Amino acid sequence: MSLNVKKFREALSAFATGVTVVTTKNSEGESVGMTASSFNSVSMSPPLILWSVSKNAKSAHAFKDAPYFSVNVLSSNQIEISNRFATSGANKFENTPHIINENNVPLISDCTSRFDCKKYAVHDGGDHWIVLGEVLTFEDSKREGLVFSSGSYATATLIK
Image (cartoon, rainbow, N blue to C red; front, top):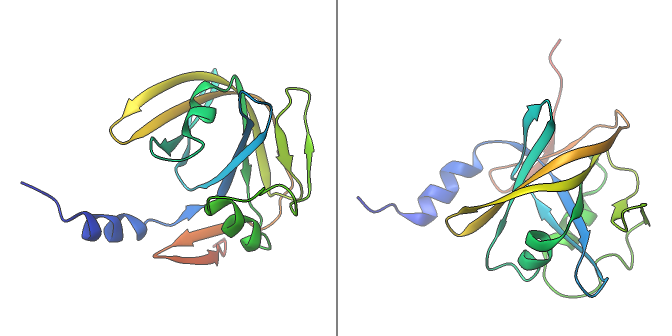
């Protein structure tokens, strides 16, 4: 059975996800970042997360080879940052407020949360690399998070 790739992608997009920008430095010491919605928790002990990067992405090898990276969970007011890091090309950090942490990883300012990681493992996942990170530190600002579903941005309303 062969799948219709377009319809498969559309069906997957119905699953609402948080929006992240994953950041690191490449082997030349340049800041690298990309928007990713493929972020998930894996384990509490040790504290592990995962995300995936297309093997065809310009920055795929930077993330596959980097010893450290950060997952920046975007706030609801950071749509412009999400769009900037989702496109290929220009210096994405030039107009993005950020700092560099002690592991030389760029951290985006004003996110809802952030997970600073040491690479734990990288696995082959078809046309993607599945990157596992051991969380070394994290921050949680309690800001409203940015959500992506069915090709559009949204925010999540909590039901109590």
